[in-house]
Amino acid sequence: MGTTDPRVDAYIARSAPFARPVLTHIRKAVHTGCPDVEETMKWSFPHFVYKGMLCSMASFKAHCAFGFWKGSLLKDSVGSARSDDAMGQFGRITSIDDLPASTQLVALVRKATALNDQGVKVVRRKTAPKAPPIIPADFLKLLRGKKKALAAFTASSPSHQREYLDWFSEARTVETRERRMATALEWISEGKGRNWKYEKKA
Image (cartoon, rainbow, N blue to C red; front, top):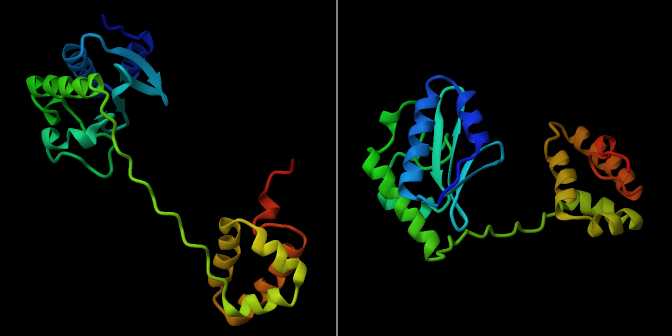
């Protein structure tokens, strides 16, 4: 038997008037499609759990959102409502009419439930690692003249190196670029990152 969470009741109650019937409708469809679902709050908005994450809903100032945890496996059933400016698979929901018919919505919940029953995993795309930054010839020449700075710079992480290199590339004049590189040599020799002034002291 599924469970409800009073925090979800409170979430719906404090949502905008237009959102309350939408969230209530979604909640009912989820419980109908998966009677054993359990409610919880994660990341400050309602989630539904059944043998793992099943789906979630949220409300904002002008729209609601609803999505399945394994939505990529349901995309043929969901249709083309997905919007890049809204979370979930149904775009910006402003009324119940923006959702599939109740029978379709319940059917989607049942499909998502079946995926969790079967232990189906979603293959997440692995992002290719960034190539190491290319050190400009003029700065590399300066580094080679300062062994301490060269050792410190080559030992630093690619992200820290990019912070300095981006700083150079943003210079609008040759004079500014040269001045920044000279300053960078001093800071790097002292073991300082580009944004050392803003880093929290331990």
